[in-house]
Length: 104
Image 1 (cartoon, rainbow, N blue to C red):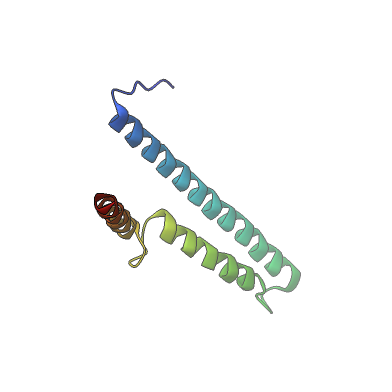
Image 2 (cartoon, rainbow, N blue to C red):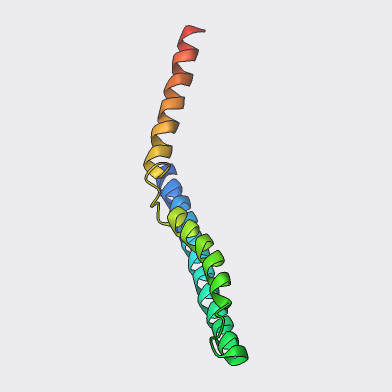
């Protein structure tokens, strides 16, 4: 695939879009693995002891916490330290740096 970049802005947009696609691919890969492995464990659990003790739920719960955390990061669902917060902090530090240089 050959994408022609008109200017630096287009290149930056392309890089950000590509990073986003990679992040989404990793999340969906993790989610797919979760579904396949937990389903397999559930089948194995049923085959071994016919639901007398659903031990596969411990694995589902533990890995599920990781899936939720991954989703929060991937889809910017964190209300405290999301993308907007990052951008505000970057601008704040850039302004502080500019102010320091003015006084030197």
